[in-house]
Length: 302
Image (cartoon, rainbow, N blue to C red):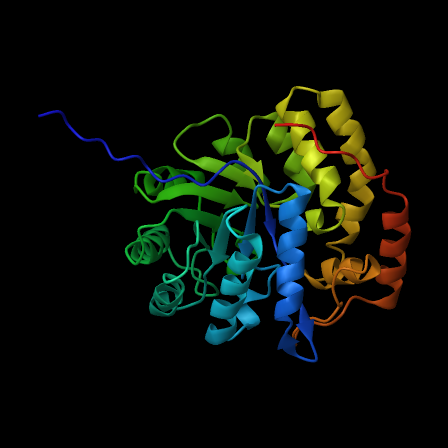
C-alpha cells in the first residue's frame, strides 16, 4: 500500500497587514473593524493579522478578542486569510485564547514567547509547543525581543521548525533576519518596517508592516517590484515611503498609525489606555508626510 504523505500547513507569502482595532468611546467599533478589513482586502494585501501588537490585542477582553476576529472574517468573506495573535505571560492563558478562537475559520496564529519572565530557550520552546498542541492550524512565531524581554534565537528557530505546525516566523530582530536568510525550513516575515525592502530583496517570504495601513497600494506595489527583480524602482519607492514609516514609530504603536488613519478618514485616532494618543506635533508631521506620497498606483495583474 503506498505511503500517504500529509502536507505541512502553510501561511501564504506576501504582505500581511497587522490590523488596528478601531475604538469609539472606549469600546470596540465593530463597524469600523469591518470597514477596515474590507478596505485592506480590496487593496490587495495577502492576509490580515488581528489582535497583535498593532491591534492592541493585549488590551482587549476575551469576548472582544473573539468578536474582533469574527467580525474581520465576516467582512473579508474568505477573500484573504486571517491570522489571530495570541500571547501573554502564562502559557495556560495563551492556550485558552487559542481554545476560544478555534471555533472560527482562522488561517493560523501569531505567537510570541511569554512576556516579562525572560525564560530560557527550553522555556520558550515548551511554551510554543504547548500552544501548538491546542490547534491543528499553523503557527507564525513572533520574535520581538524589545517587547517580550526574551529572544527566539536562530538556533532555537531551527529546532522549533521541526514541529509540523510551526511554519513561519515574524522576525523583528535584524541579526535574526540576516541569520535566517536563504534557508527553507520555515518562512520568515519581516516585522521591522525599516528593514522590509532588504528582506524582500534577499528572498524573504513576506512582510508584516504596520505602516502599510497608510496607502496600502504603495506597499503592494513595493512587494511586486521586489518580487519581479525591479530593485532600482523598489528602492526609489521605498525612499519615498521611508519618512512616513519612521514617523509611524516615533511614538508607541499603534497611536501614530491610528492618528494617520484618522487623517485619511479611515478610523478614529482613539487608543485604549494606558496607551496615549499621538502628540499634536507628530500628527502635524504625519499630515505633511502623507501629502507628499506618490499618486495612487494601479495594482499589477498577478
